[in-house]
Image (cartoon, rainbow, N blue to C red; front, side, top):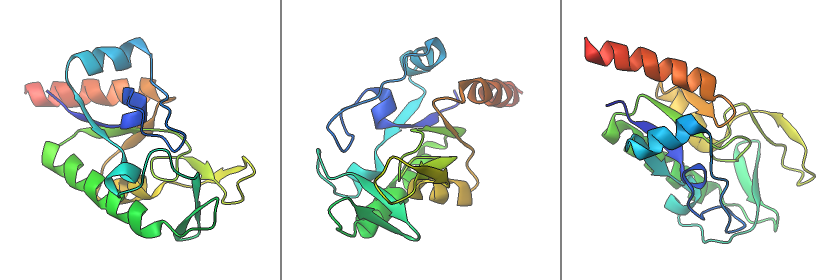
Amino acid sequence: MVKILVSSCLYGEHVRYDDGDVPCLDERFLKWKEEGRFVPVCPEVFGGLPIPRPDSQRVGEKVLSCTGLDVTREYTLGAEESLRLAKEAQVGFALMKADSPSCGNRFIYDGTFTDTKKEGVGLAVEYLQRAGFTVFNEEELDQAEALLKDLEEKDGE
């Protein structure tokens, strides 16, 4: 069975900075969850950050909290652990939370804390992509489903 790395907040765990979750309720996602395909990760928690925690955004190569604290080290440790788990579980791909400073795969917030997005990727996604993993977000389930089908077909050969 092809495994999928997934952001813990999409999985339904309360790990976000605001102690919330943003569970993905798409039928396909719920089916994959029921099948036991998911390997949930929260890079921020893996890096030692508390729940709740101040909102953070990528600013160049750093990750800064809205209070001005440099949390790059914690985000880096979390990215490294997420990558380690992806390799260990031999996931086929990742399904990560859009726009997150760790998990965003297309856009991230621009570091001004004004709700402005820019093209870019979160730190964990950067590590995953550099290692060759394909990363989708919760709005790209059609593409994720197509890749899963291809990987299942290859796995069945």
